[in-house]
Structure formats: C-alpha cells, structure tokens
Length: 153
Image 1: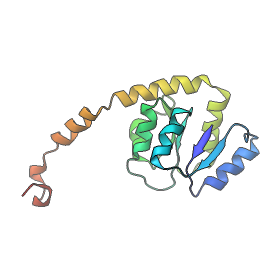
Image 2: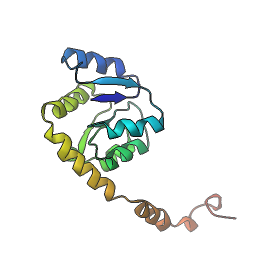
Image 3: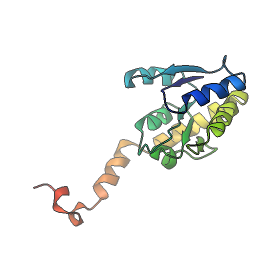
C-alpha cells in the first residue's frame, strides 16, 4: 500500500505502521503533484484522504472513486462525508482518530476482498455523479433571488 501526501499526522501514522509491523506493506511516498497522483491511483488498492482540518470538497476523493478505489477519509473532507458510505465503499473516520485510520488500513490488509468489493462500490458511486448531474444541480439553483453580484450585468 502506498500513501501519498504529507500532513500533521504523518509521524503518528508512521509510528503506528511500525508498531503494527506493517513497514513491508505500506510505503510513504510524500507529496505528489496532481499529474503524478493519477499514475499512483492506477497502481493503488485504497485511497486515503485523512485531513485534520476542513477540506470543503477535495476532487482527489472523487477521482479515486472513479478509479475504483475504496476511500478511507476523515469527517473533515466534504466529498468524503457526501460520497463515502461507511463500510460500503470505504470508511469515514474522525479527523482526530489516528488509531481509527490505522485500524481501517489494517482491515484492507487482512481482508483483501474488501478492496475489490468496496472498490467496485466506489466506482458505482462515482458513476452516479456524472458531470451532467453536477450541471443540472448548478442550473437548478435560482440565482435571481440572490443579490445582484451573483447575476450577469
């Protein structure tokens, strides 16, 4: 399993990986640029988006689901809260629960069929939200009731 990115909980997560003896199963990649991330997703089993502070709607979560990856995400990420069905296409955990993050990772390691089953469910979720659906949602919002700064001059 590869983990891309950095953050305030990285050292704690690395210590937990060591405590559970999972060093041979988990590789920390560090920060990656968006173009690099797609290649990693195509070779990955699970996508983790564990943020300690508000991340309103990270697109990377949606991209991962479209790639058929189950998501382990924190409750501070909008797209995790809105799209991840806990226990079906991934796991939603508290942004302060590093132990819960480790336990979720371990669930995938000890039960590889979860990767396939939840990954399939993640892809199904992504297919429920095509661009056309987003366009319909945006067009359905009546901006005429909003202040004039939201309307075309």
